Length: 191
Ligand SMILES: [Fe+2]
Image 1: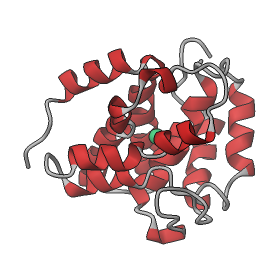
Image 2: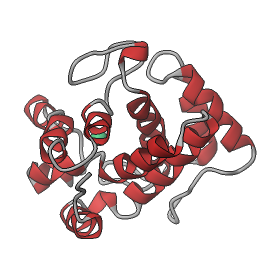
Image 3: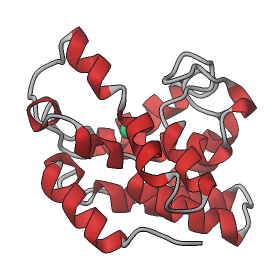
Image 4: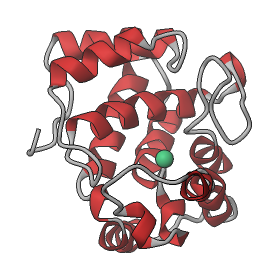
């Protein structure tokens, strides 16, 4: 398997997308821990480490003005933003394990089928994507973003619990709550 030069790609990504500093590493870390809790094998854990870091790589193609916008996005801007899973898939599909590229493609699909880009539901969404979705949501809430201050960990945990079975896979949320109960969630310094 031929892989992208990870460190260079991550540096470029972090430079272009200021909000992603540290974020991608915490998402990878939490994704791997969730995968461990689910009993996934070492190949899948390796894929999670890579997909966690690269899940938003497609944002490199988006206008930095949209990425760093402090207020809410317009409908057109939201449409553009929603293309990033497919852009990331196109960037990675021929360069690494296809399951990593797939995990990136489906990382905004929701368990109830109301996500994007395809509206897949339940087990039709690859498990690696269902894991990255939870890890990404937790870190997005607990770190500072252009559009919001960092929210308290307790709030983020309760949001993920509240959206179990709708946005998130309940099995993944179960493992997440176990990690939360023993203080094993990776936290942004600013949180
Ligand atoms: Fe994303």
